[in-house]
Image 1: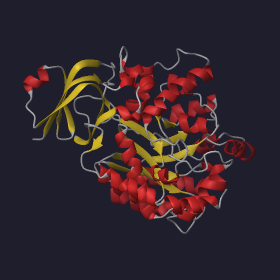
Image 2: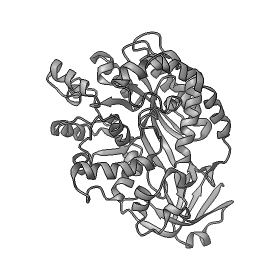
Image 3: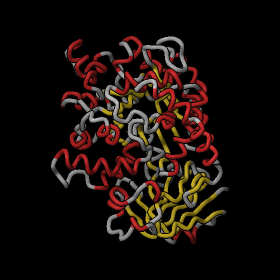
Image 4: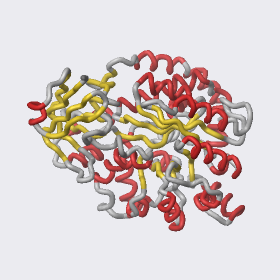
Length: 438
């Protein structure tokens, strides 16, 4: 038996009733939540380790439904460059990205997420096997998709080589406890119909997610309007690649008909408000999508796009930007935003049966936010405190799959300082290469 007990915490269960338990107690046995309640748990269960939450807020681990973690090595580059994807990011990646860079960037990026209370993340990049190994090393839960594009990429010499890599990757990781492998066609405009269908067949064959950027770009909307007289969502539906394993990142430029399709196909939605607003791409109709009960989670996008990897930052932006855009301060109460960051993200990834809330029988993925820092008092509404007062630095303890990874705001085992120094050593090489693109 391996049992831990967390006491003296205010529990946001995020269960169906959104139950809050003040001065609560949680018992964890091995990697599962064994009991949730009050002081009676302390009398009923004996534990090898007791964690004093010190009147903090215990919440489900946050879920980042869309990112490119390894791109942290490029953070703060080209933030204001026009047409950045084609003229800056793709060329930069072709010149610099290799397996060692992805390994280092992933370890740093995953560390940043864990330190901010993100216990599950969805990633799309190259050399995804290195991302998987990094996630395992740090102990994070992850959904990882190998990128597929219609041109030679850093890890594939041939166009669409990512499909072969993806199948090898899925075979390797399909039985892992923490890693869910996936296939990730980059976008409709970087894949033709046949290869999108091939990716979908791969997803169906192994029953794994298919991840894609959809309805994000202005030129993307124009392309499918002129070539098919359709939106990107309608086009993808017409070629038969949408189902409940499909995770769509962004969905900025969508119509009512698109939302009907998304609902019908039960698609997961990764909403990336920080990156979208920074790029000036637009504000998606989240009010309508959430109101329809669609599977909406929050994402940071890559750290070159949104510059942060934590979800606490995203929660605040979701509230403020959508209230402003809709001119309605009552829109998206903080409880709904925390829901998107936790159980909503789990629903988007079809993982809500075992993560996303603090309930008996679910995986022990959770975070404690300390409440002693100056920005955290007074507390009248726990949800509002998390969304509008907290920051990533308030995360004190992080547990994934029953293992304590962060304690007192530091890793229990992983040497983050070493990885940070490795990253800093890359700076001059990356800077010199990037200067050639400006």
